[in-house]
Image 1 (tube, rainbow over the protein chains, first blue to last red):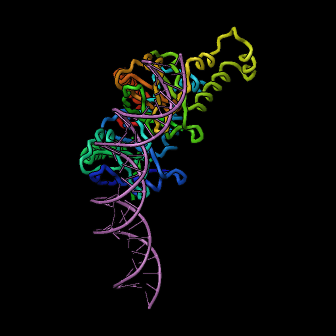
Image 2 (image 1 turned 180 degrees about the horizontal axis):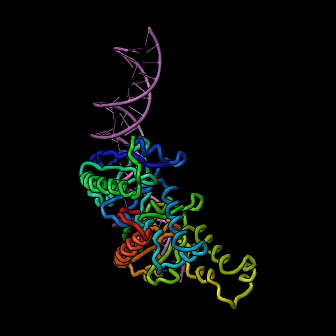
Length: 164
Length: 164
DNA sequence: GGTTTTCCCATGATATCCCATTACATCCCG
DNA sequence: CGGGATGTAATGGGATATCATGGGAAAACC
């Protein structure tokens, strides 16, 4: 299960969005009628998406990271302490997929993204993201330079190298 | 079964609250006519909710964690020792759901939350919570900052940005 | 007997279902 | 190999169901 590619999808006047076939095919075969959208925890204007099992798996890893195995009962009871997994759960919504592969984008997400006529769906491997098209374009430009620099910096002491 | 999303629900003049469809769908299919509300054990003004089976499962885990496997018989007999699960049971009430998905919020919980015209229902994964809207807003702001800091602290040697 | 709870009906907004259309890719058959 | 046939993806829209809410009336409670 790995979300790849990027695609621009239109929003019709009912607020519906077509889930790209490439992403739909990555959802678990036994749970393709719904998935999860949630606000980015630290990047305003971006909405993340994943399968239900993928989202739950992320929360499990998160809880395991924060507390030890014994912490589960503490998190279940302690309402005062900050709970990252709980925070993400509150910011998430289960979205039903219509039989034809579309879903209606809840207003809260549409506002967060700042959608007008279209959204960019972009694969990030373990998850995918919804972007405002213009903002996505800008981000991509910026990332291109960073990526080139990153690759250049990978092998500082390379004598040979070169490619065919 | 995972409670997600957050939603503001009005209280009508009869004290009734609509259980959001997103939460109702998470209740066990064989037990959707009732659920459990209980006071937060350590955060005044917050009321927790869960399915009956979910609440019972939490009590079981709590007893298993606190006392050993032999603890159940001890708890059944020892009225002198402090019993956390028993304490939670006393603070809990089974709430009936009307056929249309509403329930009447008992006065004790309404007072604890400090409701006026509305309540925020927020998903925490394994359970959900009822909040005073203003207090929830404040908590959310505070948690947002903590979440951003938490994500930042995950990878000590992180050069680039990115989000979770 | 008066208050509270439960059941039922009403309503506006939204979401869902179903059918139609266009574009593009693949398939089939000679 | 070509050209029609078929399939799927993305989009549009009308009809219907569901959600959240309000309120009246019966039923239960003290």
